[in-house]
Image: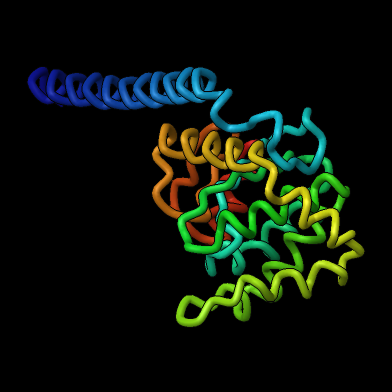
Length: 213
């Protein structure tokens, strides 16, 4: 091998090493920036009123901005429920409200009233199960929700008193404000340890969660 070829080869190797190193440092720098950004926005992901499930010290904090009248949220619900069971103890789930649909605020008020009776998750389950009836986009019938509440053991008379609490409207406004700040434009929107879901889908959600174990 002559001297010129050796120089060309050596130069190529240096360029490749430089590219690999540059890519590594760029990715490391970007990861660091993402971590800092997530830390700065930490208060936007969870509020004192937010319904939560799973240990707070879990390796994964999964924040879901959802709408009880959203069909996609209904479809994702059993999948998220299964993830909580499959990776028990490893995920801390936080639910936030983004009422994009016409009867969403009413349904959220019911959920918050149910939470006072320790029945939030059961009520969310029954609302999603019956969503095609009460939340039908062509002919919504939100009044049907009252018929479902006894099925989960709620004191309906108490719910009817609690759901008009002005504090509920304030917490919905807070969730909506946090959603706007975080760039949430559709439901469900997921954040995993402060980072948005990169690609929307069941498998994509599970894969990104597993990256943090």
